[in-house]
Length: 333
Image (cartoon, rainbow, N blue to C red):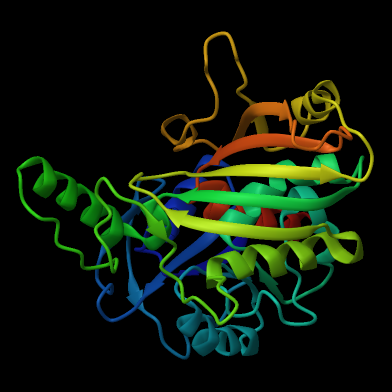
């Protein structure tokens, strides 16, 4: 039985994490829910028990076996050292430590063995997880040289307030009014725009840069080259990605389907006759990433190109579920 603490328990990912721990029957002796002063006092039901969110403090992590940090990077940088001094193992969902040397960056289906005895384990970016859950089983059997990915990212990636903003703006537009941006810089209803993370001098935004650098760390020295275009779209929940792959050797559709049909964390949705392919409305609330639109890239006449389309729940496999899978591995080993 484990003593667990969750910092950020009232956010979108935190609440999803609590539901997944219960659904997967994770062995919990004590569950401590933590948050900022704004969140303290909120009530959350866990396994028919009403738990009260406590304001995080210097002594909050004393006696904890595992700590989930599901707040922002600033909070993780502040409280990770406190949790580590208390002796807990830490699973961090933020970007704070992902690229640090000695910190495993883990998608359990890919590289769980890198966890070892690490006291701090990082959860990758949501878009990175969703892409690589699908790409890895192909790459490990038939080397991929290059990935070109375009993302269609739901507002769930920016939290509850962003989801509320989409609902409000949609009503405003349908009622004939101008939408009023608050969380995002631009209107999100009936619109799409470059992911809101900062754009660097090279023209890539931070979300795109994460997909490139995190994939390199997760896959190791034989990682493919990656280029990404990340876009925010007016979808409440579940990210989608258009993925173009260039293999080292010619690759057939049939072989791709054969590999993905038995790969963990993936469900094939690829019915051409019915025009039924991955959709965020069907991926939302699901653990598996949906993959389809599998076809030869006819612009690569040497037969090395494959096109895919993926939808995956950003709050589940893209965040909370991946963290719980890491915790299950930690407890089992």
